[in-house]
Image 1: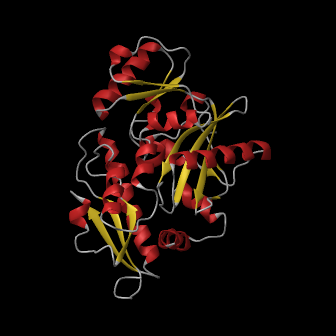
Image 2 (image 1 turned 60 degrees about the vertical axis):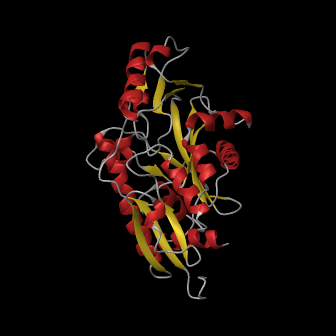
Image 3 (image 1 turned 120 degrees about the vertical axis):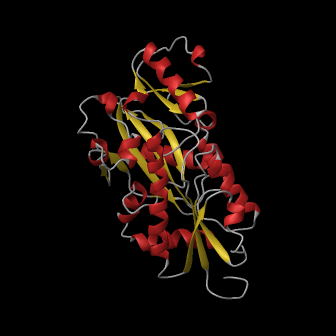
Length: 333
């Protein structure tokens, strides 16, 4: 309730940047995806709440000045301004400091998950299996690697930014070239990790339990080369690409119960280690021997109607409108 005793009012916060200060030109597609998601969320909430969409162009403090925290709940879709590093965490920290009740994870959890190297150290301490990895700040540090293939990623991006077919490399020369590209293009260190050849699962979780939603598996059958079996940037955002239409999600996943139980166990452990709240998605690869590895935790994953999180929610009989309203209710609780 607002301070005046009226109905709950929800402000849907999202980023809207005309350009990005780093990365590849195509990365703006992910930004546009957030804008479209904010519209879908606002429309879904409108039947139950008074709703206002508010874009962040410069600072969240300025954007929310007309919406006092005593009267508005924030549906937080903010992922950053102009692609700046750790903006997603900073937005959440700012909202918390300003006194808002916000959907999704805290700024601390977002920071832990966005920094892939830090998250992997947390996994290791907790005994959660994750692929072997190393961080490179300069291409001159790349002198050897024990076993190929590997995948090269920016250390602090999400949404598969910087991950295309070139990200998986099979020799030292290609590794150096890709590390150089990440450092120069994304202005951050490059995370290199052992590429797990095998299956990929998404585990969506939400609520205070949390509740584990039906497992989902990425269908890579259209890619005969196992090194091309990744959820690339194109697969997520580029509607003109082959990968976008040929990496469907199978939900519920066709997986034997023993493996499914282990995947769920690891996803729950990863949720707790990162400190997720509200809703999240854990990405897990399973090698050819049936060993699962946690790749990363996505706090506040994409909530678009076509995205994987809602596909898992839908299998429980929940509509899109019911999903976004429940996320607000979690925040009120």
